[in-house]
Structure formats: C-alpha cells, structure tokens
Length: 196
Ligand SMILES: Nc1ncnc2c1ncn2[C@@H]1O[C@H](COP(=O)(O)OP(=O)(O)OP(=O)(O)O)[C@@H](O)[C@H]1O
View: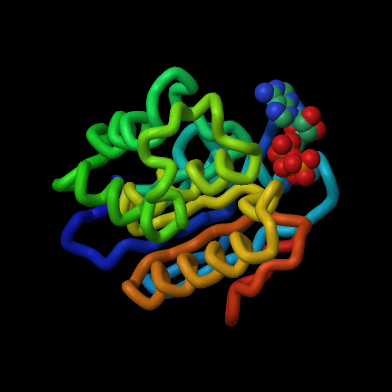
C-alpha cells in the first residue's frame, strides 16, 4: 500500500510479468514521481496491457515488487453500464472512488471530455469514439493520482486526441502521473520510454 503521507509515486522494482505461463518481461525497474509520465511501446502481444494491469494491482508480478498509488485504468472495455445514462454510469464508478464529491467530479469530467451534452443519453447509444471518451471521463472523474491508459487513442478522432493530450498534460501539471501504453503517436513531453 502507498503511504498517504508521501507524494504519490509508481515504482517497479525488478518486476517480471508472466501471462498464460509465458515470461513477457523481466527485471523491469522504474519510478514515476508527481508530474512524470511513461510511454510503454512494443509490438502486439509483447505485454503492454499486462504491464498496466500489474501497475493497477489487478495482476501480481511473478517476481519483484510494485508501489502503486490510487489509480484509474482506461482499458479496452469502458465498463460502463449500457442501460444507464452516461451520467449515471459514470456516477456509479465515481461513488466507488476513495474521493469526495462524486457528482461534481462526474460533471467536471464530462465537460473536460466534451461529453456534457450527452449526459442523459444511454451508454448503449454512444458511438465508438464517444464511448472511448466516456472511458476517459471515468479516469478523469476518479481524480486518482495515477492514470493508466491502455491504447487511449484507439477510436478517437483528431480533436479528441488533442483533448486527451491536454488532459494528460493538465493532470501532470497538477502533480499527477500517467503511464500510457500505445502503438499510436501521442504527445507526452518528457515521458520515460519503456520499450518492451
Ligand atoms: N488472460 C490471459 N491468459 C493467458 N494469456 C494471456 C491473457 N491475456 C493476455 N495473454 C497473453 O499475454 C501476452 C501479452 O498480452 P498483452 O495484452 O499484455 O499484450 P499487448 O502488448 O498489450 O498487446 P496489444 O498491442 O495487442 O494490445 C499475449 O501473448 C497474450 O496472448
């Protein structure tokens, strides 16, 4: 567990990632402090999503140790209830976060991701790109110190990619940390490169 009195940081200490009995990476060590970002790159199936899931605490490292602050993961599935309105679906997750004011956080996140006008639209009616933006809104609404973004650019149009880049930059400027896995270009100034 992260010490709440210390600034948040993500630290991998000699981490080995194994999936389906296959060793994907070994002895991986890095530290990200407030304001830092890292870009995880590599071919399909190399282990980028696995690394993010280990960072999120969803998978245990086969070897080594991970220090993770409170985090939010944007993965392939938005994990939003398709029968609910966008606002209600986002509020469901925001209420589970260890942070106050879920309704205010959701409203702010929908505005930041350009989704405010769709607040009352059922999730099932959202387009692919809108659903991806909704997944991003879930991360923004969490106000978690660590954002874990797995292929966040997939399905986004050019304007939404710019919005994403701005949101990540703002998050870092506020002392947040971002770990991004992608094989698409994304502007992440000064990011640590983790090539798998
Ligand atoms: N639940 C699972 N059980 C067993 N093997 C898995 C599981 N999930 C992924 N794998 C395997 O682990 C390896 C790494 O997968 P991972 O999703 O981490 O790769 P990736 O680099 O994110 O790939 P992509 O660029 O295609 O998204 C792949 O060979 C994949 O088949």
